[in-house]
Length: 119
Image 1 (cartoon, rainbow, N blue to C red):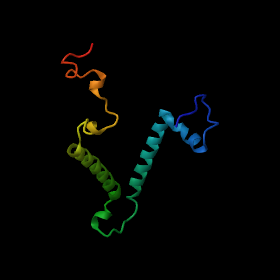
Image 2 (tube, rainbow, N blue to C red):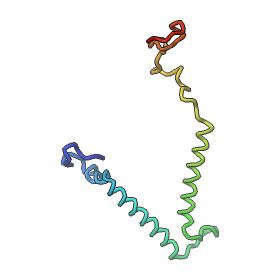
Image 3 (cartoon, rainbow, N blue to C red):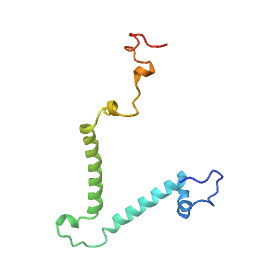
C-alpha cells in the first residue's frame, strides 16, 4: 500500500487510494488508539444492561471478550508447544530437494579433493 514513486495517487485504484494513508506511522498509531477506544467502550457498555444467559457464567460482564482473548492466547501458546513437537531439522528435505547444491561439484567437499579444500 505505498504511493507511486512520483508521490501521486492518480493512477491507483480507489481502494488503494483510500488505504494508502495507513503507510504513515502516525496514522497507524491513530488507528490503534481508535480501535482501543472502541474496544473499551464496548466492554464498558456490557455493564449497562442485564443479560439473560442460559448459564450463570454468561451473566458475567464482558465474558465473551475475556473468553475470546483467553482462547486466542491459548491457541498461540499451544501452537508454540506444538512447534517443539513437530519441528524438523533445517535440512530435512535436502536430499530430495531439486534446488540442493551438489557440494562436490562446487569443489568445496574436502573428501572429493583428497582431504584438501580448494583455495
